[in-house]
Amino acid sequence: MKNKNASYANPGTLDHQMTLYRFPRMLVLHLKRETGQLEKNTTPIFAPYKLDMKPFGPHSTHQSKENAHYSLQAIVHHSNTLSTKTKSGPRASEFGHYFCEVKRNQQWYFCDDSVVSAK
Image 1 (tube, rainbow, N blue to C red):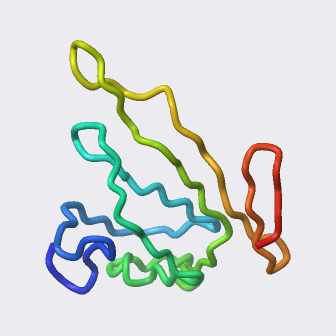
Image 2: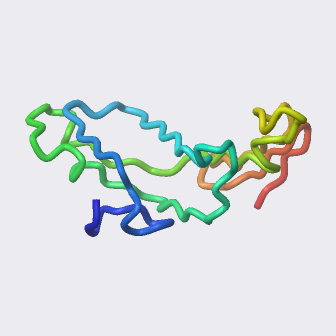
């Protein structure tokens, strides 16, 4: 798909398209960030704080389309690589670390294991 709706990280490389009919109250997006060889795509992605999903339901007549505006509430990050080498070739990693940023009462917090700090 080569148009204005292409991937922000790598314009012109998006190979899937999705449209919605009914919009959920809470929207959770998971971005696939690995290649076919279990390697992590490290290109930064910049997520907007506000997201209007109405353009992704061009044929929807469902009443939920009127409320298809979302505010970013949290981001989960993964550090380290997604693969390790063995004698027989690459395999999925058992290593890595997850941490997140969450918003509560208009304040953003950084959460890493037992440490929570205001940003």
